[in-house]
Image (cartoon, rainbow, N blue to C red):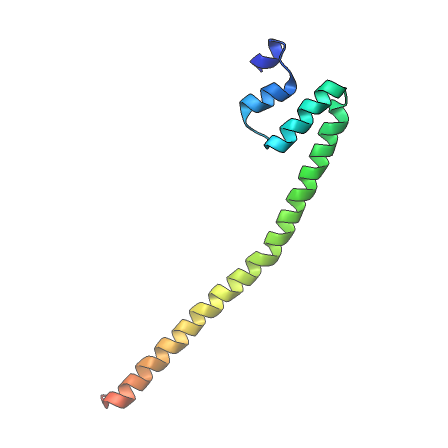
Length: 95
């Protein structure tokens, strides 16, 4: 990273790269100044890992329900279209 080679801080390099959210960049900047960069990066990593695990857990519960509803809706439309055609033939007398 050219900024690090020029003597800029790690937070400045991350700000330029636009990889992390602003809240994390603020924490990294504070940690650089206080000298606790390793602990702060470990804290950010564990927080991000927990956040990702939570997102995956939510998605694994929502996606099957959505698939089930989609299939049930498709079957419902097929049943309704069948009976509409059936009753249409009965009432028009063409069957």
